[in-house]
Length: 225
Image (tube, rainbow, N blue to C red; front, side):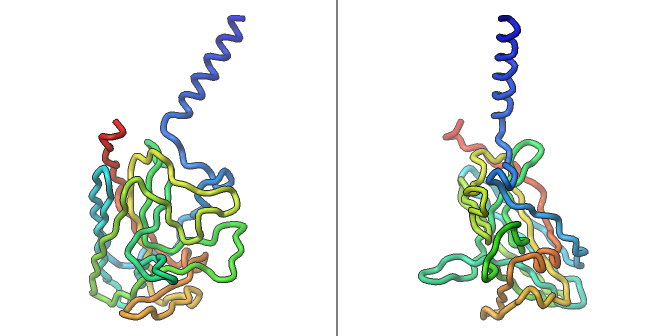
């Protein structure tokens, strides 16, 4: 009897500990798809990002300066619904990953790889611009909290709807930059006013280098205690 009670106490303790700080589930458990680190070398650009956090929002202001002798492609736009169609926007992609102290929100302007098992007739698109040698661009983006997931391949990739953790503890920002020559597989198209669209997928993902900010803690919402 005493042994049974001890086993019950241990089981309860394990269950309680597992509920402390939810983790981002694996892909086959309804979590984010695999996102291998791109292998492209870092182009010669200066990247800096300032993240301002309060209980209701996150604002990111980042700057990129091209120190290369040729153009670089900066994936600084996303495609969002607009009326009956879509438009390019500075709204970020929003996903999540596991951090040392709990789930981390990852805001980004970048290319995403093709998720396993997904068949689409047309690849989703993102946007960006060519940055000439010596040119600098500054972009402001951000989200309201609690955040809503935004990933170009959607929220259901065959293993249930993917949602963000309810209790993320931190946030960071990542930007995809691609050095010349721009791979033809990106299928860039002129979107007007100096903007280009590109096709998400493995070719774009592997050609980019991700520049990421440091991780910043999220502010505590007083209403949540």
